Amino acid sequence: MKIAVKCLLVLAVALSATSLVHAQAQKKNAPAPAAPAPAPAPAAPQADGTSPPGWVARCTSGSREAPLECAMEQNAVLTKTGQLIVLVNIRVPGDTRAPQALIQLPLGLNLPAGAKLQVDEGKAVDVAIQTCEARGCYVNAPIAADMLAALKTGKQLKILFQNLSKETITIPMPLTDFATVYEKIK
Image 1 (cartoon, rainbow, N blue to C red):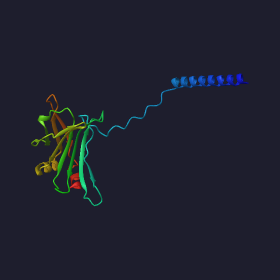
Image 2: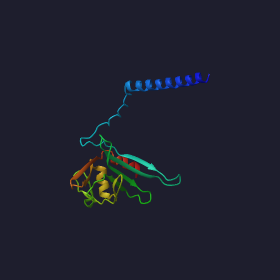
Image 3: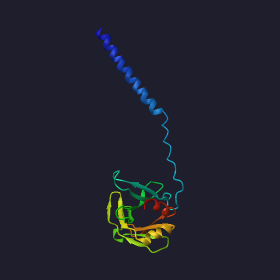
Image 4: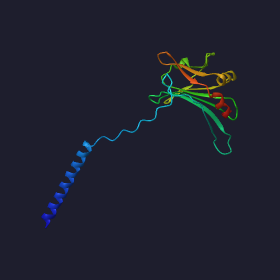
């Protein structure tokens, strides 16, 4: 009787191993699972390979009693890789009501050259790059009244900076809906 049980046990193990080998062979011969559908392409990529324009307004508050803090932003992203090139965030702090710009630039910049902001073909305004960290380099600067007026009436904001080879990079950002969105946050 003990021999019969041992034989049944050996037979069961052998059958399990055979079915496992058969299952693995079927997996190898099975067609590959369908690749996930590609993400929809952005609406209309610009000629420079950045994502389409659009200013977005956001308002938040630290608590129900705290005043709203509003900001607007637009970014330029490489359409092929999704890499953020430039992010422009303009906020109007509740205490000062003076617009402030926070601009995120990519890493690999010629820091001493700083950055420049130019609306259409107007005068370029120098801004200092304050700091860099893993996500990029940052400019934090108040927006002068004449620059704000130019942003509201202009067609294009150009953000200029130099790479490490001292080549000037220009990132254009359309201003078509800037004035409308700014009215929402001020």
